[in-house]
Amino acid sequence: MNEHRIQTKLMGSVFELIVAHSDAGEAKHLLDIGIREITRIEDLLSEFRDNTITSNINRNAGIEPVTTNPEVYALIERCQKISALTRGAFDITVGPLKKLYRFKNTEFSFPDKQKISETLDNTGYHNIQLGPENQSVFLSKKNMSISFAAIGKGYAADCVKKLWLKHGVTSGMISASGDLCTIGSKADGSPWKIGIADPDHKDLMMFYIPVHHTSVATSGDYEQYFMHQGVRYSHNINPLSGWPVTGIKSVSVFSPGAELSDALATAVYIMGVDAGLYFINQLPDTHCLIIDDHNQTHHSKKIEIQYEK
Image (cartoon, rainbow, N blue to C red; front, side, top):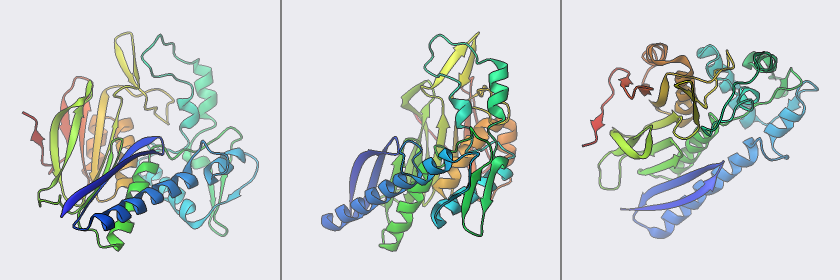
């Protein structure tokens, strides 16, 4: 079998799809299936297009519930469960807080504390009301909004993987800006290798982790951060405090599903090193690797690392 690949920009990220197949025509068909599926999901979830379910939910915040479809409703329901599991460290309502900051390492001043407090009043996963009888979603505060930025790409990767498995794919990979989902091993039988980038030089790999039929998501502040009085502030905002996260440069989470890895990478970033590792170590088949702001590496139990030489 040979590896066939395609690369395109969707969901605000560069997606690369790789499938191993002996028939080039069938491989192209499989890659096309993957691209169409990601496009379909973007059409469902984008907050930047007026005609999506997400935009409709946001437009009606504080006004009335919006009837969704089974797929989007189920995704929001899972988001709520992850929010509860992480005690609010993962929260799809955090968007309004992010808009208070700029993360290009230019001249920076913190938002007014009162403004942060007011914005916090319009966030919080507990303010998402779900109506299971008609699969409706209601944002109870007028200025609320939801975003799938911290889980959408992982969900899309899982959906492509599911389709490929139905078509008999035994070797493949879906990659999207830090989120990666694998099927089996590479065409030559060797494991897929996940490169963990140096947070200060994103094109340099610090080490590699071999994976097989596994998903990984990385949350890092590679370019979106700022320095203020000697402290590095991440673009990740703590949904509970409204303040940018400090102390961590990068979190990678490995689990059976890209959606879960995506959400948990964000949650661990918010939790911090000690709480994050403790949390991950309680979960089955889930591992993580954290690089702190001193470039020290911390990892959960039973994770195999190959250091770059």
